[in-house]
Length: 277
Image (cartoon, rainbow, N blue to C red; front, side, top):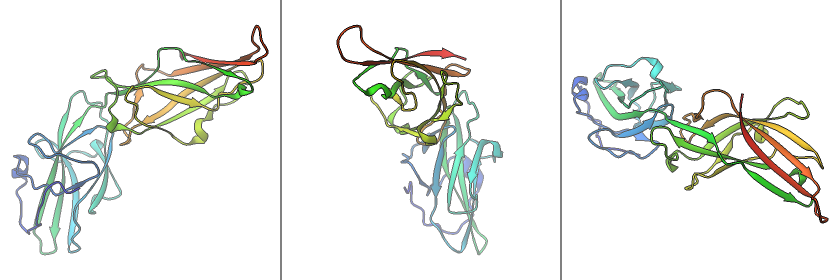
């Protein structure tokens, strides 16, 4: 997406002018950016974004990340995937455990073969990553009838923002969830959920999400205990969503299958509860 026009005329630009707000922005961004006085783009730390500029075969390019005063920032603040010297780059704005927003400039310097250079910059506001997940507080209970003893269990999840205490907005979705399941009763090792593939969760306006644990199944007239561990949750831009409570938070799932007290219909009861390890 072209955020501003520039005819790439060959002239030298004083970087101090850029720091004072004289910015020629001609960056293409993977997400829409509204140009304004304060910043061109807002990004949550830990996110990955793609940027590009128009290619001119006779030119060379170099990308840098600069602070609010346009001083070069060290490599710990971002990762340039691939090379810093191409027209298309992928950048991760590293999670630095910020407690407040930080204004930075993503700059690209184009040097023509005749020797003159032009530096353009995108003003970016990096916000702290306050996103977190928590298991739904209410106990989930599902009843299955007939031959559905192997029916999977749904485990409730919430995704929120610590700073505001509100659900994570739709702009951060879909989420990618990875988890493991261990059969406590059988004493077998934990297995990767969803065959080792991240499970995709789409946005829910009600912030009502459920993880369908197909690996936690029952056996006729037996109680089987499972342990679920959420190992990774990442948003649309690959920013990490962590557990709300420090430590190893797990879910213990019990799948109970039994015959009813009366009647001729079999029943399977599944429920879970939150535990700490």
